[in-house]
Image (cartoon, rainbow, N blue to C red; front, side):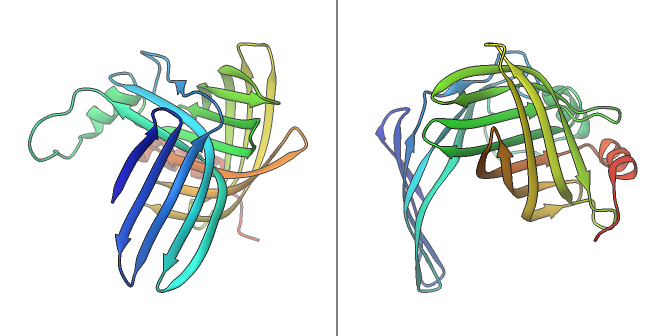
Length: 229
């Protein structure tokens, strides 16, 4: 696998080569400068992080089938102190120190070259406040300051079914988003969900990455679950 900077902070080439199984040949082109995660704000209390929406084009070859790629997504990048040697398994206390709670909600979508958003939230047993992120609306960028995220989960599995987010940026603009889950990969009390998101009369695809402490996940599942249709 390789990632090559064609133009720093703007264009990247991504490749993966496993002949007969999966090959990826992609180019990411940013639609705005990177959004810096505020220093000292959860979930990245001890590191530095950026997020950046962009346009992905190229090709995937899956078991010999060639599939054209032309979509919108997000790249993120973190850096900070990393211990030498084999990574150790993090203890729950370490996770709590990193995120403030031991959990994080990471949601995003892009509808086109001038319209995208991303939020971070800190799930607790009582609420899921949005703590930061960005809003790109009609090409105008703003940093999200506050908000609330609400996740409805399947009673049987604990998987997200819908996600609603209300947020406010530093320009005084409000964002109201609704997402319907389409597919996911999930393990234990955390995972990634693909959603079709709707906001501002727009529709776009993106993800919700939810990672909860076990205590928070059980509380959310009990309070917010609804029977499977």
